[in-house]
Length: 100
Image (cartoon, rainbow, N blue to C red; front, side, top):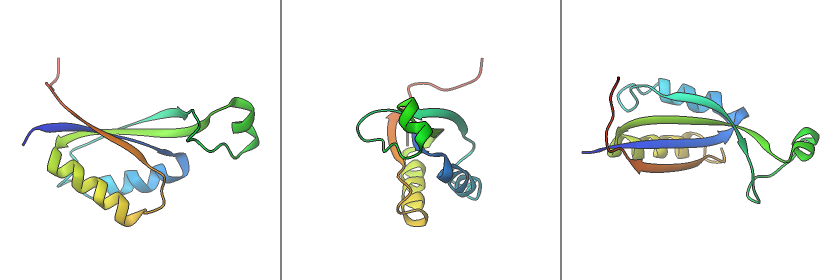
């Protein structure tokens, strides 16, 4: 099965829980990268005064690559363990991967 890139964008207060889930399943996730991100747009709820002033909400973005079957299992794991986590995701095919 071909590899896909799973990208997750989530509220910062949920990030550690998702990272712990990923780390608990080395059979599904070989590794991942977490980065600071900012949520913008009409679908992002701005709640804190600082968010309202800045016009964006702090987010964490997590990316991992693996077989599509594994990445879909990761999504199901997140949905079952954190059903209201407000995680936005997308899957894209990986054309090539390696180290230089």
